[in-house]
Image 1 (cartoon, one colour):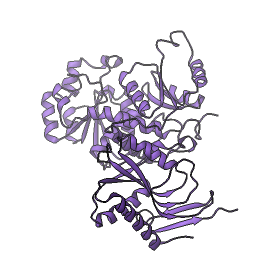
Image 2 (cartoon, one colour):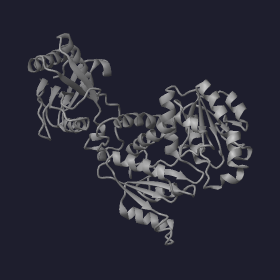
Image 3 (cartoon, rainbow over the protein chains, first blue to last red):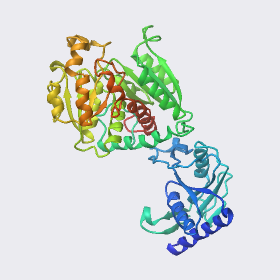
Image 4 (tube, each protein chain N blue to C red):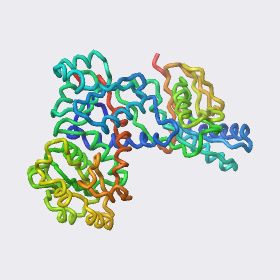
Length: 173
Length: 311
């Protein structure tokens, strides 16, 4: 069930291909969600740029928009969001590593709207593992994995974790 | 960092201070967005309990709390309960019943914020108590200092004025030393404590202090409304001896020394007019950074949860 470097590269390629097809010649922006979504977005960016695609790039920290701050014993450490282009009127693709409940994406949409009014927002994820708790669906998916609600899906990336792998820890039943 | 209250700088470790200063950075970034507000404290209540008048600190906390989407109430003490003779204990009981999540306290008495912190589940932030501490001022000073000097170790700050009665001097000295900055004090002999923390240099002569080559000169406000005035021969004399006069300003400009001041400035006392337009005056930056630093504090404290909380 676990996947390595090759499988991940393939997934990123697939995402890049689908995005190119959709946006042929049209300007858009990639915004990666901290943490690891930014790393996936960077890989997409370099693949897309290699294909001659021009795009804006940004990183979003959604900590302040999380809906579970009340339930945490310590608030997550904030990092800077880096969005230096005008969000107003932009076509934005949010990028994350794993799509699960959809709550992170909900937070990200709220955070993004506070930077301006984008013309449109789409969602690209490296892994979709299902079990949404909100009505949110991705536009681009690298890999879909069948999981149980309590399974744990972990993405490791070279720049943050030293290795490219997707691990699925099955819940003890 | 897991803490319920922020009462002073002494009890914070260097790591905790640096975490708070790090957290202030993304908050400051928000100020350039079209929407400056974030929902982190939505549904939380912040109560400003100021027993002592303060427009600046109060507004700064109010803006910080509102930008975090908290509801803010100003409990205007001098005009209400104290006049009616309500005891501190009764006030605390009232606050506890209001179920506020954060209480910002300023008081003439040293230690009151600590008492309130022990008695309530709310997170208590000391906004200045007597001559004891003013931790959020110290944090905004540290944040401002670090923006200019990202490597703080071995840098030098000269704090000028009535050190003895100043909670700003006490807290800012503590914080600077914890982040590796060398601190010196300059002021009239009786107002510069002889037994300060180890390693703090003591000057009573301006020229000698400047020869120490500080990176930042931090001018304390002369508290006209407090007792300080009686220690100085006159305000003119203070300006001549310890203020940044027109002449001294030239030297500061030539050396590229930065100027800080907690505000509000008494022009012609702590500094001459020209300093206000100086490109290395950080005084206005301090005001802006005060909001970011206080947002970082509000965001980092956890009401009612930590081990130092009341039962």
